[in-house]
Picture 1 (cartoon, rainbow, N blue to C red):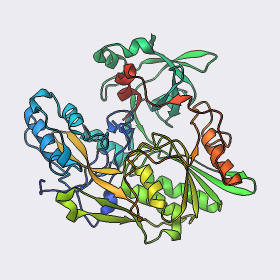
Picture 2: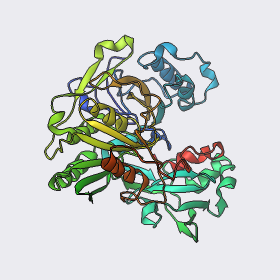
Picture 3: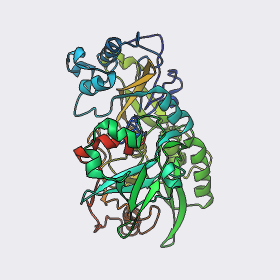
Picture 4: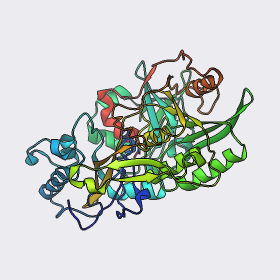
Length: 463
């Protein structure tokens, strides 16, 4: 492993490694969408859905020249060095790959690693440091009849400013229906949706089941909101706080401070933490959020331990909960989850469980108990899984996801934050009865887009 620098990252941002400052670790964002968030978040998240952890390794700048052959060697060497599963990396013919991005996909060790990726370093920095994202601002779900429904439209995004809302359906792009659009060559699709940071203004045909309309949306940069909603609901004599938390990035700290000041002032009895679309982000923010929830019950306690591969086991460390004013100090929290709930989000759930009751409501999370450290070269950053996380009780290894204690389906036609929305109402029902209630609207929506729409995922998933 190169020794000139060490840094820990989670999705797309490299930071100088300092073992005394473990709070700078990131969690890999879920690769749901495209690039950074991995897709989930960036790919990441995403994002997608955003949300990476990094481990030991170089971090910082690495690699030699920017020739394709050197970039391939840079990826291959690192994957056989600090990569968490370095002893299982398959042997491939490097000359068969025309880019480091395609190479890393074939070097990942399945089924554990679906997340290692390479993306643009500048976009990654903008995402995690400044909360800046370039795109349209949507998360889509596929319905049982293969419609693409807007499950989330990010506040202040181009789509939100154009008036598109959750629950509406994407019917066509520039007059081309989606099945036809999905079969177009990628370069033709890019002419409509833009590649990278291309500024384009496609016309989206959007429907609500009764009527449809055409909306011109200009793809561009916007500032993300970590806290999408904070509210207090009076339910059967209890004050129930609701916090919709979307991503773990540097600006999240200020937003969490405001949100928990409001919740603490209301003296809430219960908290429902909505992580259904949160694909991850920085570990220090995860420790901060968990500390706000646990309060005195977690102060000074271990939030997570992380372990590198056998070569770098001497770097294994632990991270404590962060403590802040207005911590709630709850004995129980309800976490709303889906398969977009990933990385740092899962870390909050797992990290709190040794100390308080965490009831998960929704569906099984994505399954990423791992972190990565970003290595940069030639304007690219590589996030290869580097560390594995466990909580204070030694529980980890949830690469199949964290199961839902109460099964409920996300219905994008329902209003987020409403006491009648499936996931939220299931949490409220558990508060009343101490058990899970059946939800009639089950499995009607699937987040995995059909293969023919895979070329759209990079565009539809955001960063």
